Image (cartoon, rainbow, N blue to C red; front, side, top):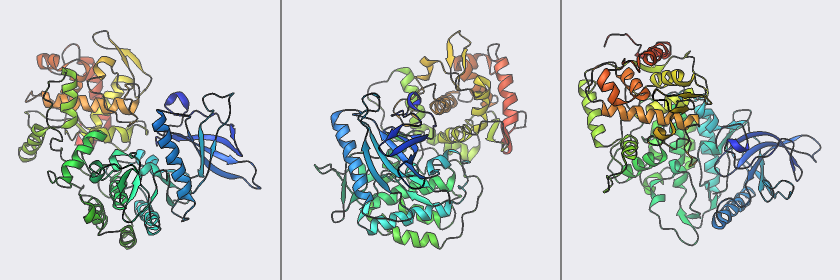
Length: 531
């Protein structure tokens, strides 16, 4: 679920006013939303004492009749599953109500699912995390998740949709599994699920299993795979174990790993003990994961020391090419986006040469990681750092991205301006819509990348800078400033004038100033430092 706190027009599937009543419950405040529903804090009105709950609203007849029928089946599964077991590491779903309110057409016919209220989600914690460092209390969180999974599996159930958004954190820090819409009871060794799921958390076999009339066959080891992904995120401050800036590129890396074309590359800073648990959960085949059931993993986790905040995790190496080239040449702007997002074999070769003999160009790179006290808005810092590290290009650093954003908009997501050619520019990264289309990435994962969405805009900025870094070849100069100048004008202009041509001089002066303020000298090179 997203951590946005607005409603309705901000992308919320269902907009519910504070104070609205459904059944015996009253809406108190918005909490979060995803692609299917909106979650609000609520209060039960007919109890002797105040009972706080969470109300998940699912829209009336969203999508096709088939999609709505599948969604109704998911809600039924959630209610049926919730009545089968209780455990301190599982959120309870209490009831589902159909809203009947013709006076409110946008709400009439929607579903309200009543659940236990939590203080926040693991996804919220990860969005605010410092990339490369474990979350506070990481060991306890992961042990709690394993305890909940082990209880489900012993009862003959699987969760089916484990991910950080579905791990809720109570006020006392206890982690509890939530959202049992895909929970299913095992029929022998398998359960059968509808073709829903979160791409980043599905094991390789989910993409090859035959779908039957009952759904896709799934084993409990699918939950173990999802736990391995989640644990890696928690232990590294939000880094995925498989490279790529989008769901699609990470999926390609997973499938390449499953067929033996790539090895598993976990970050070096994973704590001892947890590294082995994550590797066991991310075994490429079901049979290998089945050797380590959730209960055994829980016992192993309980014996490990508390996870300390360790050194920053290093960026992962770039992926091998996940897909063959298209037989038909794509449009120029789309070709650029494909080359940047897929990071083909040439990039792997360049990275190998760089590791052996330094930068693949005769220049230096200003910037690096962000200073701890950098004047970057807290809500954008993890997005900037994750976007920079997703492309694994040394020149595309968090400090450079932050410096460009500060220069373009002062980190204002509602900024509007005019580019050097007189074209209107919008949003936190100063995108011209026509240019944005060539580098757009669905970083939010909602199916609607937008230059006005700060997350999508920042990832698209990193995408363009990565593509530029590939195109500049051995052009000498400060690589970071060359990329910034290319973003402001064009690579053609930069090749002709360097980074300080008349159209770029003032812009680059401001980027330099921000780079100086933002760069952590321990993890990068402030502007002006010798090569």
